[in-house]
Length: 404
Image (cartoon, rainbow, N blue to C red; front, top):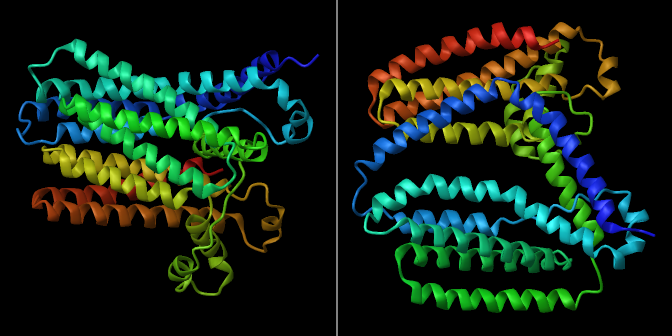
């Protein structure tokens, strides 16, 4: 007899082994040292900034928006796989224990984000509201956990609805309500917080009624969403180790491809220059990751008061961007057609080094302009020289030795 609880335990065990397999590669890399440095420096400057916190700083808005977004983002990890669409779908009426366990697991794995964010905001909270006690903040944490559970359940109900627009409107409405609730709780206006909570409860019951009207579980939607999240993890792990399960995604971006490839000469020696440029633009998360790192590094440069630390953080994010572009070299490792190219493999290696160096120089230039924008002219001179030298030495030294 089919036991969905035991089936879930086996599926979860296999899932944890898969995560652990690649997590070891991630934690053994340079990323641990980089993250330790980032967290330490951020905590130091965060404490310094709190000592001069402006009286009109919108603490309630910052914490309210952050907590509202956090509880609204509540995906349910079902751990379903494509073969389940054939072999398990027939046992849908016996899967209640399986999906109950999925919701519990989803809450547990997202709990660390809640605790991390609440702990990070506690110094800001008590600096802005020194008259309040720790009991009140712990009560806020309890409310966050309660709303996290509510949003998880609501998301599960809405996963039975196939219309994407209906799910998107529901998520937007709940997100706005969540933000408003936590804004008024932090502000101390419990009356308005209670009124909006009643609206949230009404929407929660509405989601329940909608789910009850659905014919059954949207198995294909559950598999698609779970596989997309797993592919996101594989793309991240692929920066540290070879991931055979990774499925490459492509996006058209015709205008951007034409811009970056228009000046490449039609010649054999530029074969891989063209290939890796359009790969960077269209495939995987290379472009998005590159832009996100530029923005985050720019925020550090803008917010950190010490000019030397600004330059150091700029170099750190140039290192991260260059390091995370290395998988470009192995991007087509399973494509046999590239083996037919009448092009020497050294040209391939040179093309990867060339595009990574170009991206690094662009990042150096952007950060240098930011130094000028914040009127740190000494920092501009130091960074433009240090950034260019670091990019050239790191890429032609370390990265070149790793491309094998």
